[in-house]
Length: 289
Image 1 (cartoon, rainbow, N blue to C red):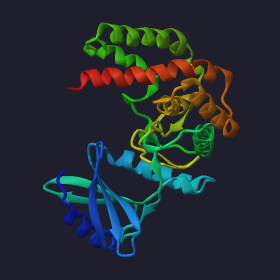
Image 2: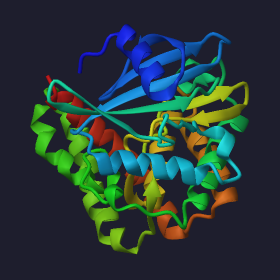
Image 3: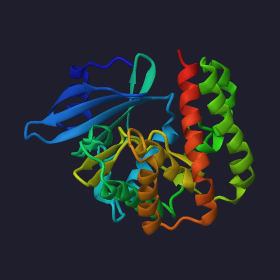
């Protein structure tokens, strides 16, 4: 995808009647731009292709709009409507379809850049996720029913790439935890609650201010999977760079449980799910050049 900042500024005017300066941002699988209008108000401009699928982009719109009616609506971005009153704008360029969205900008510091990590902060992360998942109990969208490599439910697929981990000891550790997943989680998966989950509360998607979690962004990894996997992902990244990893995880789980109680069976497999997420990550990192 090749769009210049000038292209984006023109599209703002044509499609959204918005006059704003554009600055390109880093993006994973979409183009992202920061927009700033004359009054200093900020927005995020996103461009996707047919590789993402219109239906999945529609699911992102629907889930965010659903959360806009919840008690935690201020923790999520909101869509700006185009001149036709729609959230998704389709344009054609060089024979390809592109899907445009503009979202509000959330102020905050990325979790990874926080200067301190208190028990209260971990607790508040869990609370936000619990409130979000509780609000999504009556949400559904067929596009989220998909086979996805980053879905912890598919952790055993990581075995395919184990040989790509060059260091024997690291490969042995990953293989051990995948074996544990096969023995401890797989037999119970049919008994775990399923839900429509964000699936990516990582340290670049969680926004904080002091001891409060002020935002959760990027629904590009969302999937219909086991509810507890959403907690597992959050715990995985919350524990990074912590001296007491267990304390971090305990407070995330405690906060979540206060808002949306977990079952004993879900809690019994959480340890193995966290390990499964890490196995997916290290095996993919070893496989991708």
